[in-house]
Length: 138
Image 1 (cartoon, rainbow, N blue to C red):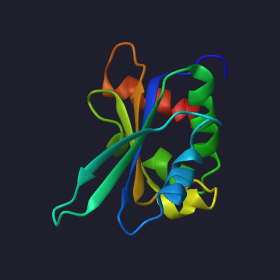
Image 2 (cartoon, rainbow, N blue to C red):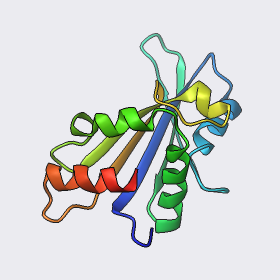
Image 3 (cartoon, one colour):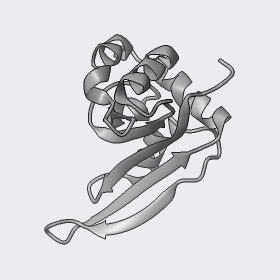
């Protein structure tokens, strides 16, 4: 695949007070190229507990290809293809919710814990074009 029809991919997860920060970071790194920088932001939960937000934005083509290659290893890929109309917004954004525990084990799977948001290139910038572009890369 020469061109990648994505402008960027954002990945984000939360590390709650009951979780090990290194393990949560390792889960997020499953989708990221080696050595990729992860941003950290600390916030507070409803009951005053510490929540660490880990996020990364992949903007270069090689990095985006790495994220896509990891996603292609998922057993849930056919389900994602079937649900593209629900997963791509009118703003040409693809949303996937990925299993944090599976990612810690090095696997890509749909679930909860990691949010993936990708801005899809589409000309004209319409949902239908974006859905077709995502279908081609998955």
